Figure 1 (cartoon, chains in turn green, blue):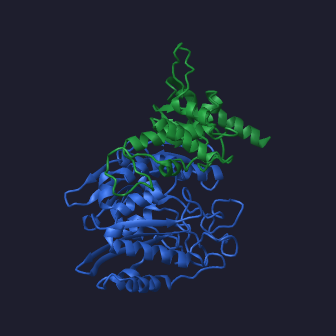
Figure 2 (cartoon, chains in turn green, red):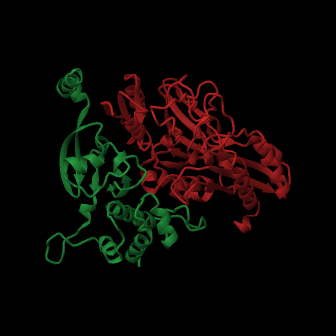
Figure 3 (cartoon, one colour):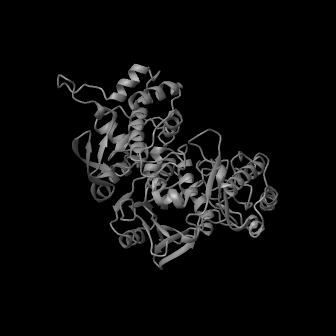
Length: 194
Length: 330
């Protein structure tokens, strides 16, 4: 009972306002005005407040990559980002990748989503949204000339890095797949590069 | 996680004042380690002062030829910076050997230096740990210590520092820039992290209220051949079991300058001064490298389950030094 009184006390009045901040996030193109408890991670906000269940909570410690989303175009682990720090940012989850189809129904899969389907690049599918968002981020990084650990150190700075299978494997090493679909995930990413 | 106050700072001075005004507050950079430690209950700040948007993300060439890296530059951006790749290759390689693409996009230069050990006893609040709770004991010394230190340990702590980046900074004679209540100052990167001694709760030489504002890579080591090599339990995305960063300047068949640092062997990046002294003035031969590295590693005092680190570190160092001495073969 003492605990519940304490919690109620924290919800009202000055102490609660100290622990919450008004925050604006654009998620998949839509603006959201939120009053956020500072403890809430971006992952919890997109799933629980916005009903976007694509990003998954795997380890919740930045070790598995299932929560990967794009913030201002860069791939990040949404489980380790406090949402309040992202005020004004543009967030893209896997739900935001589908484009307008020929009939304008908004259901055209992103080419990488189609490649995952074509290559059967998953078994249980739990890691797939994170894999796809991570691969999109990785492709953008390579196009911007970001090297990886396996890039030839003599490769010229600032030029797009061509991605072979070793590069794809290294760049996606932050996304675990406990079903072990890695070879087909690499196949799918290769398909969109080719 | 306990509720906390949140302030976003817009200048270094404002950040330091905000921290000083809130005892028990912490600076928040990329959050990749701090937020995790808050989830684990290891860190329980009353407030976070967000320094992630401070205008400290530039990499600038200074008039004296050195390279200044802002503390908020993201690890991925620093690794990709042309001046870093061209002039300080070991730093780029070390950054790319650490963490994952997602983490490197969030992690900052300053935060990378201030990340805490991944010792499982430190990260588990139900276990004894002198670093987390001084005087509570060390669970690792007689427990699970496969990943722990072999150099510079104390009775109180055998943790290692987990950073790859910091190992390269130590070898390259970088300096860490700090700003705090006492003004601005610099500390050599190789001296920035401490050995555990009687106070393993203090990871670094940073003083209360100080903020890392940047890192300076000196002109003198710019453009010298340097390499980073890391051994770990899987091919990617794992902390080092042992690593080495080295730079070598050979002139007329003699080692003129050497900078060697080991990672994952100690509570800080282990600058191998003994090996460097043995090499300077010698011809860069296999025998000279072996003698120098063995002299350095003779100080190792492994425990029951981590003796493998000594020959592993030796092999890494000999490989890297050999390749640096024969640039045509790298």
